[in-house]
Amino acid sequence: MRKLLFSLALLTGFAGASHAQGVQFGVKVGASYTGLTGSDVTAGIYKPSYHGGVMADFPVSEVVSFHPEILYTLKKYDSDKDLLLRARDMTAIDVPLLARYHADGLFFEAGPQVSIPLTAINEAKQDKKAEFRPVSLEYAFGLGYQLDMGLSLGIRYNGSATPIYKKGGQYDLPGRQSNARNSIFMFSIGYAFGGTKS
Image (cartoon, rainbow, N blue to C red; front, side, top):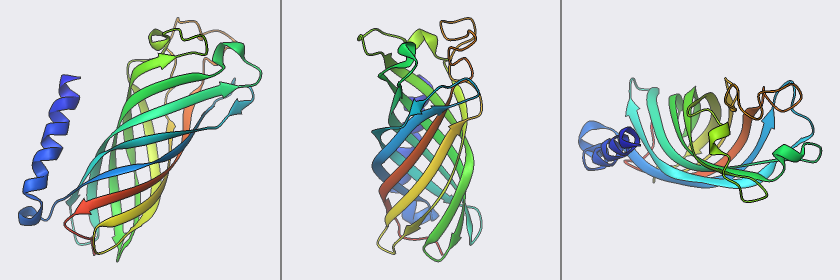
C-alpha cells in the first residue's frame, strides 16, 4: 500500500509540471461490466460496476506515449450455477501501464496491468479476500478519442493473465473455478490537463 500511495503522489506531482514537460495529467471515471472466464467457469454472469482514478501521459515521440493509471475498481462476480461464487464483490487497485498510439484525437492503447485486491465479500457478507492472490497480472487494450480541450471518451477490455484465486485455497479444486480469470469491459470519461496529443 505504501508503494501505491507513493506512486499516487508521483502522479499528482506531475500535474504542476505538465505544461513545462509536455506531460498530461488527469482523472477518469466510468462504468464497467465485470465477470469471469476460464476453462472451469460455469455460467458466469457479467455485472455492472464502476471504476475511477488518476492518469498521466508521457510523450515518447510525436505519436507514441506511455500512459500509466491508478484506478479504484469494483469487480462483481456472479454465477447461476456455482453457489460458492454467487454475488461476490471485490474492490481492487488496478495499475495499467499502457503504450498509446495517437492519430490526431484518436488513440489506441495496450499493455500490462497489475491488480491488487483490497476487499472481497460474498453474498453472506463473509470476508473472502484470503482466497484471492495478493497480486493478479493482467493485460489491457482499447481505444478512444480525446478533444483539444482535454475531455476524452474511451473503451477498454482487460483480462487476467493468471488465475485470480490462490493456490491451495477453497477454489483451487476441480470444478470450483480454480482457473477463473477477470474479464472486464470498461467505458470511461476522462479529463487531461494539457490538451490532446497530435
